[in-house]
Image 1 (tube, helix red, strand yellow):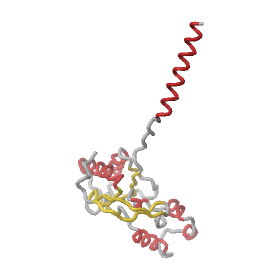
Image 2 (image 1 turned 120 degrees about the vertical axis):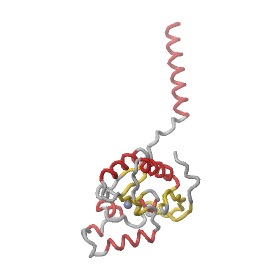
Image 3 (image 1 turned 180 degrees about the vertical axis):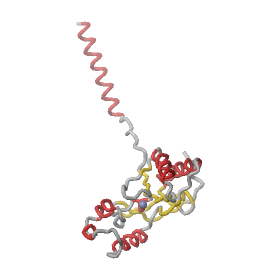
Image 4 (image 1 turned 90 degrees about the vertical axis):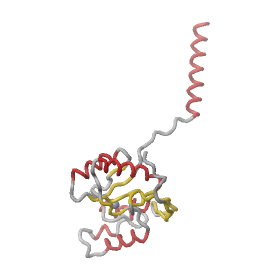
Length: 186
Ligand SMILES: [Zn+2]
């Protein structure tokens, strides 16, 4: 795990599922801000990429609300190409996720500090090589129409084995042994 303790930090207002929350942000590369929970995974992925000579361009990381509103407003412009009108009136989530144009303000992964848009100058091999590295750190490309959008989902961890389950297994085990012993000795 990379050491992110030396990196700049700040707090801002993040948004998830339309709800505002205070978010701790870490600057993992110059001008690139992500949630503190995801920071070491991003840092590790970028460092491993750099070790292989892969230096992506950082296009967009954490987005404050106003930036998402501006982006959304731009996409709402009827003159903007490629946005079918019916989808503009869809549910907030459906618009962003189905059409992949811009998430409704409050719903973008960029507002959770968990997404970075990365450019590779059209170098598909570099992009795929970085994607493979990133996957090892719980970072995925989850928007099919946006090959530049990388999002940190974390490595799924098995839930800790609960103490009560151990106790039940102990009780059941002792009961079986006791029952068997009773049968054998009777
Ligand atoms: Zn994005």
